[in-house]
Length: 319
Image (cartoon, rainbow, N blue to C red; front, top):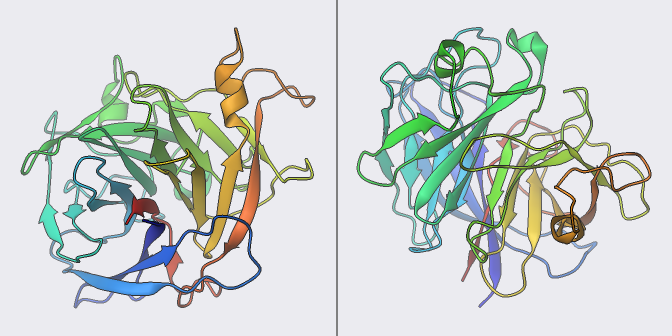
């Protein structure tokens, strides 16, 4: 058995013939390597433009029960100030063996629209969660994130995770976590109910690179946990990302940036176990919680470094 990462490429040519999204699989290195990590093309998801104005499958998640991977699209087109996609697209089985099946969950309530321009996803048991966020006010809406729950029935239902959501939050014009942007989501299924984390590798959102603890019952994000390099310097990256826990063996937390860079994140365990301290508490010399991000290597994904194709979704399968 070995750990494999999966990611999906967003076709930069959104033509009238639809979107062709290639799914790639690559071996997760056990330690940092200077050698390029070679990906393998698993298959191509083809979605026509009739499904939605634009389909970007940015959230990837592995079901711990079935071992199969599902993908969730982003909420809206960058630059649009109003939600444009009432269809929440969930594409199942994009891993090996490649056999995609598409389901569109029913919004609950019926006027639900997701907030944000970026998307992350993961399973908590058999429930699929989607975090959707906006990293820049230049998109016309506030910086922030909201969490959504998707049932796995066919077609299932999607709902906003919030104690008392406002009309604006339900309609996708305001986030439930104002000022806290995240586009990667990872849920620890080895220790059910113990933790879920979200990632932010953006500096353009104004608060640097962070993790957040996610409350799956209320949808709230913790105070930011600053990401640092192994030498203790602030991590200073500015890219979209995916986040994933390993669901077997020794627990690992990994992130994939859209350029193909793979990072392992450590140090969050100490804060979770610290007596009397919540995640993101004032434990570091800079007055904020922190964790360490170590570059494991770079996946040689087609057109990733140039930015012509973005690879924002990330999940891990033990095969």
